[in-house]
Length: 145
Image (cartoon, rainbow, N blue to C red; front, top):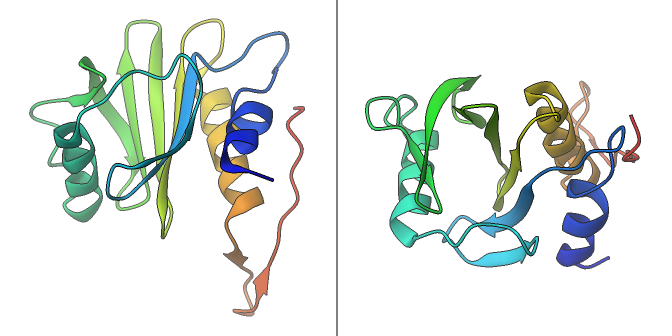
């Protein structure tokens, strides 16, 4: 399966008649692996600031998270692993893996929790996870909730 198929079939999937507004898989260097047609044009500086916040949690809080020129207020996330942003009735979830950033952008009626679940499920599907014994395993996840 190509990276584009993961975006199209897993990130932009239908959840109760709704989808993410846009989504992308981006390398840590800012290279686009795949993106939805509606994903905003972002800058290298925006990706660098996001990567810095993963290394130095809280660095985006004073200025906000910018993606495609849109400013999001940074809200609770998981330091070093997930950044979440809010703007009006929508927001963004960014999950860092060892190789890429998985980004989901949403607006109502999709909820923040649904966006988080979509992004986290793709990470579990595509990137290997370790079980409690430390051995590697693949997790198969389906889009329907």
